[in-house]
Image 1 (cartoon, rainbow over the protein chains, first blue to last red):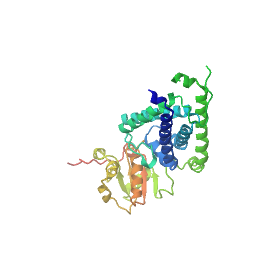
Image 2: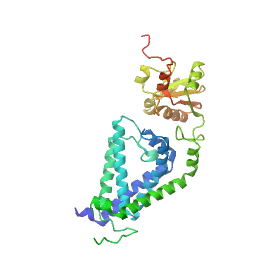
Image 3: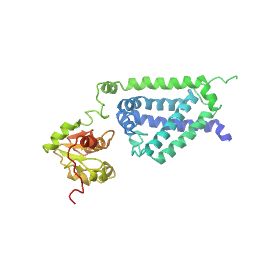
Image 4: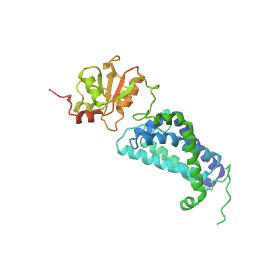
Length: 150
Length: 168
């Protein structure tokens, strides 16, 4: 699949995936307490961990998104983004199996229900971020790394 | 590069540590005010500030019992109707959160805007009482008291129970 190695296509993917993560992060950073409550509503962790998640996770999303777009540690950010998406998919699936009706908390006030559609949407983002993870991803990068000799 | 190579690459982990560490630092610095409030114990039961929801407080079983006994408050059951029918605090009004969220506001007509409202749900980890309280706050109810021990604590204390089909 030559298109998967096309540098313009990969740049577009970086802009889309990074953009979605930045958008998701900004809506949460705007209201950390609301996001903390969203995390708590999943009934997986207590008050303290929900609070810590709400303080740190949105910034992980934001910085990983920015790094992905500008090309600083692009592979690390693609791995982080993919890891987060796998976690979100498992989290929503487990929540559905437990029969808990909850807002996903994904995009702040634009949040919606944690359901099968959300799993599908996250799966699409996951496929895109995996393409970035396994691509050469060295064009249009702010920090180019030296090619490995081995 | 395959997945194994990516994981073995020191550069990958350097990047991940960089992103995580930077997030931790910025997250902490930009939320110092909230962290201070958290350490003071302000968010022990729910994530909102007193300025945001004035009049919304948490109360314990003895307080509920006292208010219920002296009929000084209206008791509101936020659980689904099916559970309410199986048993509830005597005199409680059923205001299922799921119905209100679905746009049916008619149960609210039975609530007094001047008397304190005591809102409860299953107890333990349930959050419907708090979510209903927030919603009621938005609709102009000023004195909201969430009984977080909920139905489980009321039952465990051996207090009276009323059932919908009683007497029929």
